[in-house]
Length: 399
Image 1: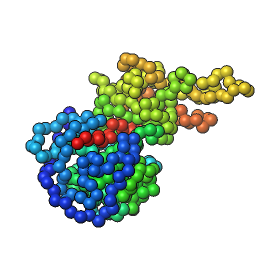
Image 2: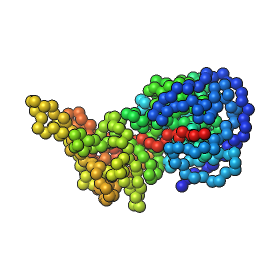
Image 3: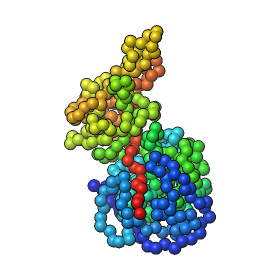
Image 4: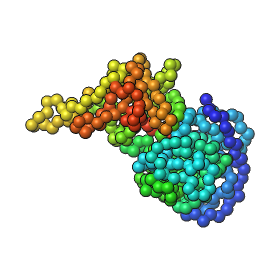
């Protein structure tokens, strides 16, 4: 069901072309989904930049994305609506947040900065989707209800972004590319003209913070999108602890495990949140099974230097590990598979087990970071988790 039925109607009339002083857009293919040239997507090619209006939406089928159905609209109009619950925060590779100063409504610097290490109202965005979809189908709405604008459609290193748009037109369109691989949860953000958004220095800047002239995706062009507010039901997330590690399943020599991992694969770290009738959530793994908190919580993970190779010694190495306090083999949802996902108001969440204890992380005497489900509350960052969002990648639209 669409939330906040604020609908923006956009005329899709024929638009006169005009010259543009920005450099030509990139044409190379980059990213897990493939970055294709604007011409290949049926969009405006270099030298044919359209006016400030909205380009006509292609009448083609969109692949790889499900969008909630909207109202019937007149021919030639595009409907835009928030199809995702809650809001989102955008983080740079160094963990800084994109901030829309004053919650939007600005055309002079500072407009969007990357100096914040915590999420407040100005760091929260709604993500809208165009319907019918195009390859650049995403719109970022600020706390005040304005849209982010890539000035000139991208290709800028000064006067880069505005946050005063009240209608979503071409320059407000962005494409999200899932980078996949062993950088799961990272996206590249592409402007309508095919350039990539750059967080200069990977974040931490109040001035000269954002560029939109990158022709390829490197570290500064990688962004993590995390959930804020209502996580919804049926959406997929990775659960990231305060130290940047993820809750992940493991399999070493057919010995199943579960713990913190710095660079797990997408399948090892991805969970579908399934809301239950009592308001709790089950976390479904990529294999279709469910996460279990052993004993319903109240457990402390302990490290054993000989966990995987108990007979190791002089002639063979010892592979350390820990006896997991979570399992991932449940085929049904019972009490131990139910968790309360408690919104902390700052784009983090506490995870409460069925026994009432909370999950958290701690460092043992040897310096190993481990999990616990024996916390009485969530008073520190060690009991708060980020939900890193999957499933936001823009579709490839076939003409």
